Length: 114
Length: 113
Image (cartoon, rainbow over all chains, first blue to last red; front, side, top):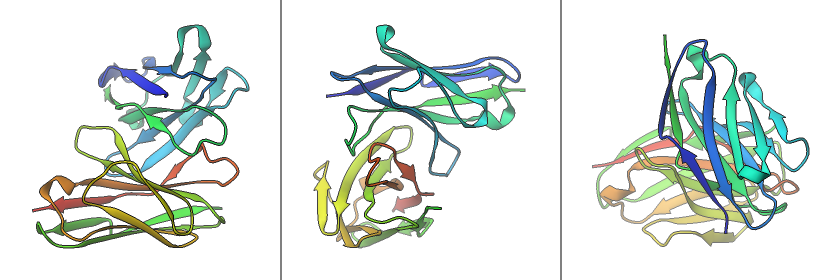
């Protein structure tokens, strides 16, 4: 069975600073990995996904994530934080193609300091 | 393009009352459909998913049930609500041919008093 661990339930960064949200996964087979963003009182929006193509994945809003098999990680980064990035971010894993279920992490709340 | 709708957006219900939340998807056929609950300060808990009409898989035994009367309609129900049923309910869909990629609706905020 697969699992996801998001290190840090709350992360604060200054506006303009690097954003780094950590995600480590556990899977017995090559995984598919996802990052979602949730703004207050809204549903989840897909930011980006890794499906065994390029290990560096670019998503919307300037975010990107790098799949590192040796570290079983899929950390989310953005070079320069904007106030509009304040939200909750969820990492998720699917353990193989065709699996209709995702396993989500517990989320990281990102706060941007003006 | 595909869109997913949920209603109502917010709901306040007394303990012991029934519940019906509806989710519909437009612009696709034979999607996989999901119900999640998000309690305050917690992650997402998968409640039910469906790969076709009348096919429902339950992930967590509880006070809730789900039905899929039409291809793009997914309903979450309860006969008698409990205080612990309060939360944010999210519906999601995934394409038949790319089932691992899920797209979420706007959610329904349920408060049971």
